[in-house]
Amino acid sequence: MSDDPRDVYARLDAAVDRRFDEEVRFLQALVRVPTDTPPGDNAPHADKTAALLAGMGLAAEKHPVPQAQVHAQGMQSITNLIVRHRFGHGGPVIALNAHGDVVPPGEGWAHPPYGADIVEGRLYGRAAAVSKSDFATYTFALLALEELAGALRGTVELHFTYDEEFGGELGPGWLLAHQLTEPDYLIAAGFSYQVVTAHNGCLQMEVTLHGLASHAAYPQTGVDALQAATKLLAALYAHNDVLRGRRSGITGITHPYLNVGRIEGGSNTNVVPGKVVLKLDRRMIPEEDAAAVEAEVRTLIESTVAECPGVRVEIRRLLLAQALKPQQANAPLVTAIRKHGEAVFGEPIPVSGTPLYTDVRLYGAAGVAAVIYGAGPRTVLESNAKRADEHLVLEDLRRATKVVARTLRDMLAA
Image 1 (cartoon, rainbow, N blue to C red):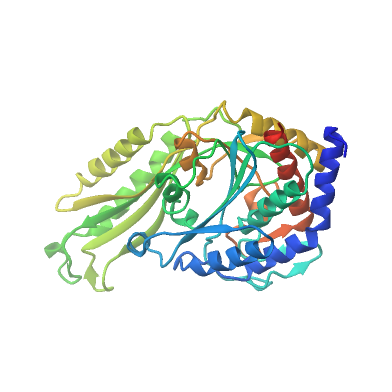
Image 2 (image 1 turned 45 degrees about the horizontal axis):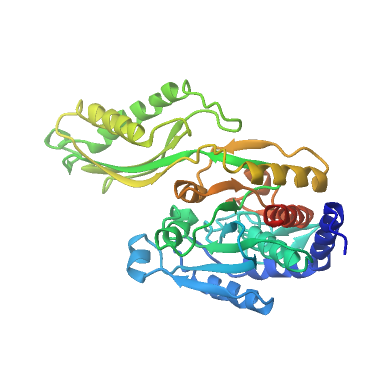
């Protein structure tokens, strides 16, 4: 067979096309096994995935996370999977990571959230786009590469993990911390019309305001924690005016912002609230220092509450996810994906950052050259990810699989 790259790419594309119906069935099977997180009982999905992979000749290592750690994180079960395929001695180790855990489906679906229905070329279901789609993309890109004749050097690893919704520390973080994988490069689940090379960080905090409950007929005998919370909320939201002035230099990322996502407090309508709990989310641009951001937020909270006599404040960090900063070492991946994306999709593939935070930061912190790329539309909103009627255009799945297969071939070519 010809070793001309154009012939090689054509053979890879043909291999993807031959098995595409199988790829779609694989994705449907994955979508039909719920992985709502919370509650996070995700080991059954890993078992199903491993069985399906075995049926295609891919042996998946199962790496269960100890129950005590899983329960401490607020979940029920996690089994992470690694598939390793060596093509030849030497060469890089390239990991492909997608997460199987998802937010619960919620209300408003026109299609069953776990039905994996196909309508007019779109597959509907929770995680159809984010990111069980890339279980399929990466698996069938590897299978296409296996069919390729010619000398390749290096290893491809599939990392299928189950803790992204809770921060990833028990997913990729756990695999990396236990030295179960040491990849040189990473492609992680994303969208097929762009290559993402940077993302925001995230600080989440729980703020508890302690006042003194009392009967509403005698409010002077109590200390109203909700009144203090109202003052604190005003200060936190006013801080967004400051944050809007801190602009990122990365395309796709604008500025930091702060959101209060949950409020709990009070005991009854005729009782002065003695306790209020706020949970806030502070997104950090890659140019910011996480320690400085946390110190700034804590100072703002403490100084505001200090103006409320009789109120005591407790601040607890829930999550600190570092930003993924731009890397020079991922240039070979970026170049290959953009080249093949343009060839397969027929349009330029931009490079950008994203305001989301992802598990990729954990690989980046371990020194792995990483990009975000996989099946999907141009934006999260377009796919309805984390909303009702999440879906994936199947032609995007087919084309993204070809792009990943071609990229792997370039990276492993002797």
